[in-house]
Length: 436
Image (tube, rainbow, N blue to C red; front, side):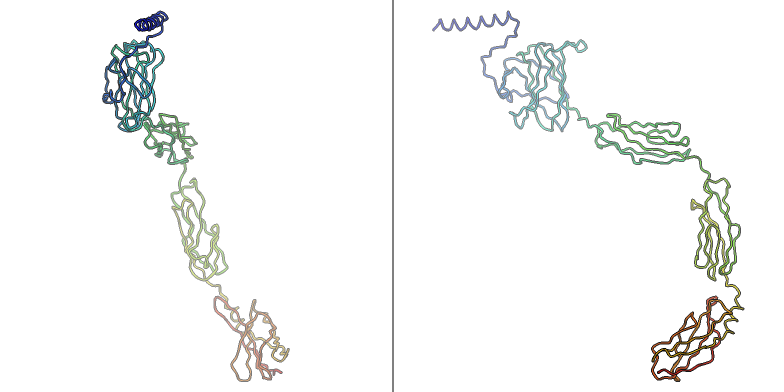
């Protein structure tokens, strides 16, 4: 039995000596049973630093793995970045920080690891590595260990919460196209999205400062032309633009006048009005003509036409709609006394009465040639009954739906509407005819 123990001891010593001579790091043989890493957790306040080393008391089991690890418990106040920094005097294989959930200790969230071999940082007087990861709000275990085994030299760990960076994804300008008069200014507003972007700052730029300049969104017109105003996010180069047009300097209309304040016309007569713009070199020389009563007097390009007896206000308005002038137009009826008298004196002569059927009679009568566009009224009655009348512009008319075997008396006269009044001529001699 003693020989077997001696033989096993010699094998272990021989193996250890061989590893040392070959330059491979020696893994410590532990006699103690590792404790659950949760039981070794020490509270760590984010934003502070703790100096530590690891010994046998820090030999823990992290789920299925075993290591000399310092276990810290942290609390993320909200979703954000956990930034870990380690300054140590120990070099060799890499450092690792395993991050696990307190709510579910067997769930590994992530592992932060240094380079395989840390380089000495003279500015920090030690070996330094830094790493970050994004974590949700909650509590976590941070198990930090050196892959090679114990850490006898002191190392300082700093952990802090960092607000997550929210990048700008879009910029929306309140206007895509604007026009600014020379010497004037206009404020543009650029809205950054998302609204909780970490750095919502933007820079403003004009592609042509000779046309328009921009400062903090205020665009100032310099000279006629076109340029683009560009708003660009500081963090990510996202941009939006607005096209700015600066027109030539304009000379506005100061006043408008009409050559006469009143005008008299008779129906059918025309008159001409002239409008003048002040100043003579105003950019807008056009005039808009309107009539308050186009049925009385119409107007087109200053030419007024009398249509009906009455009064109308003719107005000339500048194209900008600001200035106007007006003329009162009175339209009267023409003197048509001779025409009226001619109608009154006219007398129609019945040429013939013809029975066309049992209940129809055709009346033929003479035309009145002394008056233009005269019309005719035919009156007829059966016996001593009530007179019936019909009107026509023709000199032949057939009376229909008459009573049979009745004697009808028929007479005809001319008439015309003049200046809104109806004037009649004299009745013709009465003629009689009997239906079948």
